[in-house]
Length: 268
Image (cartoon, rainbow, N blue to C red):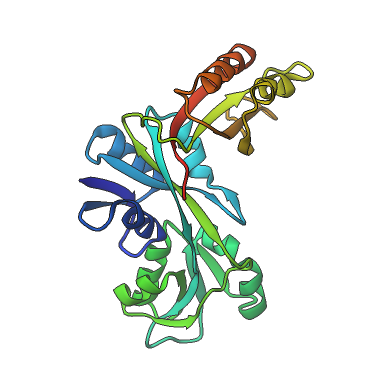
């Protein structure tokens, strides 16, 4: 089985892959979230695993934007406790910069401002890439996992530096086929309302009438016009459930745009 995720080795995305699939797989290390989508769309990978939402920083913009354009389906999800550590080269010098994925830097911003005020924060494509940079340069500290420290020969200076305890990221598993009902499912969709008054209420009313609970709603600006938005919605149930199917048919008639991103088992 071939599974694509954000590389290099040592990312939290890699941990999410192993949590879902175990280690008896071929891991394809992508250089970006966009490449994870491309590898899965082309069939080079049977599945792709991407971060979609963090408990403190919200939605992952790159993933959400790509979900609007892809033909892939969300077929599973997994939640991963993210323990950010500050890693240093064994020959560490006075730090010139601190590297990390932009989400990791945001999740640790207050801690970094308190302990490393004035040190340059450098976004990288992944936390593992930050660890690799620290391994190559004693003047760079990295925000990454303790697993990355072992992989790249770094020392853990401080553990669990996120500003909010219990920091958790939700990952979604992508494939080219849909998933049958499991009995404990959720459905993800993206939709856009029209411009007239009460249009968002019209979109959500079918869910209320059917007694379908939303587990998430998030707005994102579109690229098609100023101050225009789409809404990412997660709701309980599978698209094969009659009441879900009927409610989504109503939403489609009332919306300017609707795409079903997938129905899949809820993370345990």
